[in-house]
Image 1 (cartoon, rainbow, N blue to C red):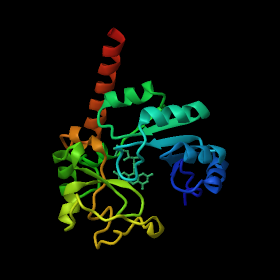
Image 2 (image 1 turned 45 degrees about the vertical axis):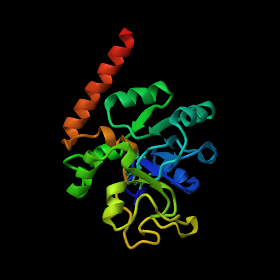
Image 3 (image 1 turned 180 degrees about the horizontal axis):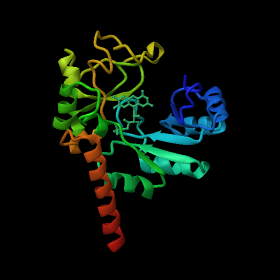
Image 4 (image 1 turned 30 degrees about the horizontal axis):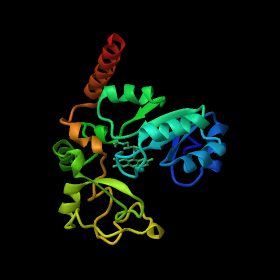
Length: 225
Ligand SMILES: Cc1cc2nc3c(=O)[nH]c(=O)nc-3n(C[C@H](O)[C@H](O)[C@H](O)COP(=O)(O)O)c2cc1C
């Protein structure tokens, strides 16, 4: 379907996307690939991806554990293509910081779940607003791969977020809930550590306008200093 409709930007993760790259390049599209470490970045670069998404410590859902200051620079040393930083950002000035460390683009997920247009339950949006970074639990229980989730949603599913069993990579299942009956994405809500500075549920237009102003203010402030 992506080829048929010539989707301009395709995002891939997990396995090296060689056949996806060929298909998407065939109609002039670009492929950005999620990585959590330099080994995966090297593999994807060898396959010819156009961009690397560095999913760093604290990002929403299937994040890595590496600092962006480490991973973005390591990738930049071996790659001239687009680097997209995924990393618990919530404000426009965060995007300027991403550029300063060598990334081309800032990639925000959690911030946009708490918007009027997002197709998420209102309790999910409210829990993002009410949570802080300390309320993010990093566990592999729900899908077999480590990810960041809201503590409150784990408690609501009847589990102790401070005492979760280990999940298993071999039972990797993105729809399932590991050993639990709860389903990741339906009952267990993913979010990054940026929740602590997400305080409202605006429209996307208002949010983008505000972020642009935050970006410009930060740039002006830094140029003046
Ligand atoms: C609920 C949720 C679901 C996500 N699902 C995917 C996904 O299916 N594929 C993917 O590449 N990234 C997925 N992500 C990760 C985002 O694309 C992005 O890397 C991340 O949200 C950025 O961190 P932030 O949420 O702290 O801004 C998901 C993130 C969240 C919060």
